[in-house]
Length: 291
Ligand SMILES: Nc1nc2c(ncn2[C@@H]2O[C@H](COP(=O)(O)OP(=O)(O)O)[C@@H](O)[C@H]2O)c(=O)[nH]1
Ligand SMILES: [Mg+2]
Ligand SMILES: [Zn+2]
Image 1 (tube, helix red, strand yellow):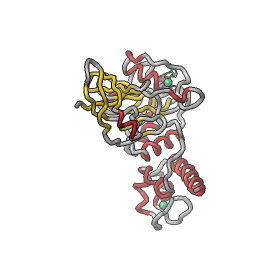
Image 2 (cartoon, protein in one colour):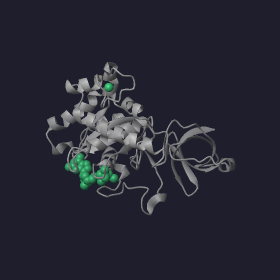
Image 3 (cartoon, helix red, strand yellow):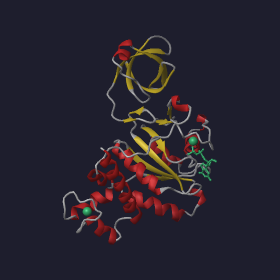
Image 4 (cartoon, helix red, strand yellow):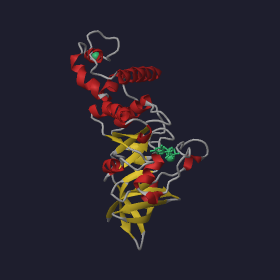
């Protein structure tokens, strides 16, 4: 048996990539009986029948799973924002960072359309996230630079792109690998809505090694069921300064003698990030009350 990765599922067949070869596989009947479903990204063991045909014999345990779009074993989310047109939505960016970490998927950031503003302006934004320990790349899909940095991030990993429509996700993939010829300038990101709910997800193999989903990750932006106390664990700067909080379980909001608020006042914590933390905290608390 050979081990491979399901890169798409379509019309009852599963396309499994083993090394550089693609096999069209069916599923052993017992998986259907056991109601074990196979989704894009699953690592499977197959028996090769002949030519490019095979049968999936075994499904290996998943490390992670995105629900919408349904992809297993995603290792990395590349959060993409344009520096202009549309202006970066930093609140959405912070939310996507939390969603990625809560799903145990490593986030990285990409600021695209960087040729549209002064370099110093992009670097200022990049610096905030770099200093928190997140990988950041700065690109222009239009002018074709920063792409090697992006390739280095994607190398040998299973990644999805995330970010608003129009920031250049499809353009970046095309610039990375022109053979992909993905449609750009289209509002094709709204999967799971309207009539196109059955749209299948495909992982695109990169020539450099690595797989990227052809649809953006996280179509739902609701925070998962995390407690107010957990929220802070997804903010590296809160982790860094909460040792200075007087009260155990401090939420760094109205509590006195708070190390995080002290750091904020000292300018050690970015004020906008802290405001986003408070907004997300309110959301998590409101959600908790419903149950
Ligand atoms: N100026 C500029 N425009 C870009 C860049 N990358 C993409 N675009 C344009 O932005 C628009 C949206 O791009 P698209 O790739 O469809 O974005 P998506 O919705 O995130 O997939 C298109 O008109 C692209 O030509 C860039 O680096 N610079
Ligand atoms: Mg697109
Ligand atoms: Zn505190």
